[in-house]
Amino acid sequence: MKKYTKDYIKILNEGHQIKRAIEEKYKTLKDFCDIEKPELAQKSIYNYCGINKVRSTKFKLYITKILDLGYNELVLTPVNQVKRYVNNMFYSIHLYNSEDDVEIFDTLFALCKQYNLQTEIAVMMRNYAKNLYYRNQLTEAINMYNQAVEYVLSNKLDTSELVLFYSELADIYFKEKDLFRSNENFELAKQYLDNETTNDRAKYYYYYYRGIATNKSGRYEDARNYFNEALKHAVVNSELVSQKGAALLNIGNAYKFESNYKESSRYYFAAVLYFHDSDIHGKSAILNNIADNCYKQEKYDEAAKYIEQALLIATQNGLSSASLILAQTSAELIMLNNKEKSPFKHYFNALRNSVNCPVDKYIIIENIITIINIIQTEGDLIELKEILSYLKSITENDEYMHDLYSCIGRINEKLEAMKGMS
Image 1 (tube, rainbow, N blue to C red):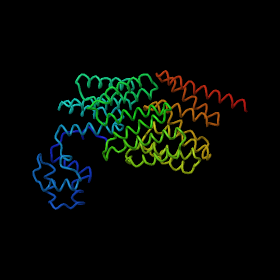
Image 2: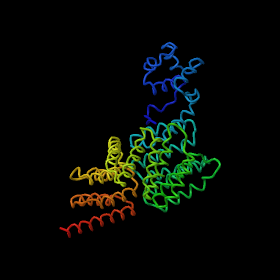
Image 3: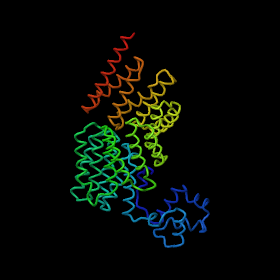
Image 4: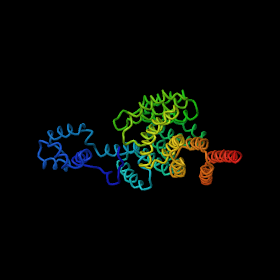
């Protein structure tokens, strides 16, 4: 799915919807005519793509065959156009991660209000909450989620949205290491889970996020059960197959945490099939995990191949959260092969950049501990200590601050041990 622009989000008449569909596949109407060489005259094609109401049955049959879409998929009412915009933004929300995107949200909010689409207004509130979260505005994001919940309750909307919003809030709190509020929101979501109106999308995300938290808590069999439940509710859509990929990826993680690397890799390679090339987050995560499994099994050349592919994806697309994980694996491989004097420069840069994106605090601490254990020089330890001191000075999360302080203590102990050996 592509990212919308402000100008893209508009209500189109019948002919203009067809024109847009053609241009998205062929770039221009001229390219379409040059490639497909339609039986209809080029002038007729241009005319049909500009009129309010297409009445030619012959043209309708022709264009649906060429575009491989039913006419009801190709041409939507204004209400359904707005619903499609909101739904597509929901699934591609990770692309909307900057302050510049606020104008896009405002445009789509206005259309939802114009057509009195209350459920879509609630979903747009969630979309904006995600944007705030990606911009590292945690308090504002949580407030917007709570406003979305209140909007659903006050307007007596479908409980699916409550399951979704509470589950996503639980995930955010878990990543911020606030286990009490995380569990509280999971329980709130669970209250509405079995309602007749609760849809598969909401159930998928409940089980998926519950699996993530359970995996991190060390209950790997329970986590696999959650992810298998998520698979049952994954959306079946060519644009959204990565839902299955994400669940399979995390089943692989559960096996990896148990050191069952063979079974873990089997799930990783299965997950690859469900990610589009455009899903850079999913692709980089799988490649990193495959590399890490190879590393754990001492297949260092294979590991290097996969991590280089993953790092290329991450660095080209500015994935700070992914870069942190990838840089750890890269550092471990470089240490083995002695390819450069300081193998940690990628990792240190990614760690500094972690303040600019909502990286899971568990991941940061786990990575830091691993890096402390493999660092062999005083200079690298001192540089890492300076970064951690900076992160500690700007965080407002007490639990995270305590963990950073503990990591600094580990560094001091290692520095003392190094002095004792010299």
